[in-house]
Length: 60
Image (cartoon, rainbow, N blue to C red):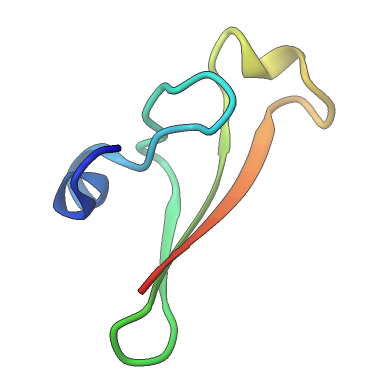
């Protein structure tokens, strides 16, 4: 899995297709906790309902 610092610049990988999601939202929770929220719109995931693969990663 990619280094967490890469996730801030390239976005986290989609758990379905593996492509990076660069347009995700970065939310900060408690100290030392980061949440990445977004939707993968790759050619593979766009066919999934609701028109992409929604995800949320929590890293602490």
